[in-house]
Length: 75
Image 1 (cartoon, one colour):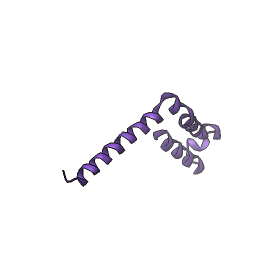
Image 2 (cartoon, one colour):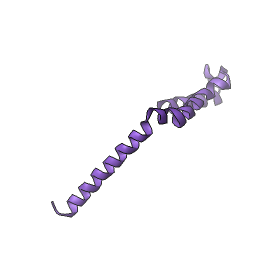
Image 3 (cartoon, one colour):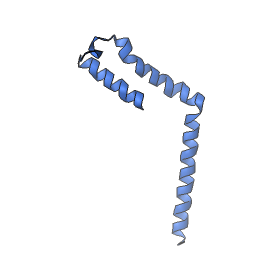
Image 4 (cartoon, helix red, strand yellow):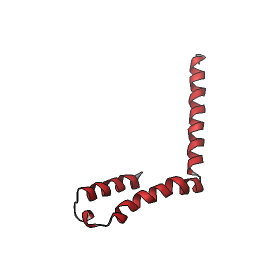
């Protein structure tokens, strides 16, 4: 997420032609977006972060559902 924020700031600085980013090649300005695509499409899947995040969310949903059922029973 931090890389996305940095990439957007760099892009805005390039569009506004603010030094030193205004003097950079478009390759260097767009490189963080390419890295983000690579990260989101490949690295996170290879590392297993997408599965761990999904499993964590499912566990939280089950816990929340059990709590709701417990409250509905009056305990």
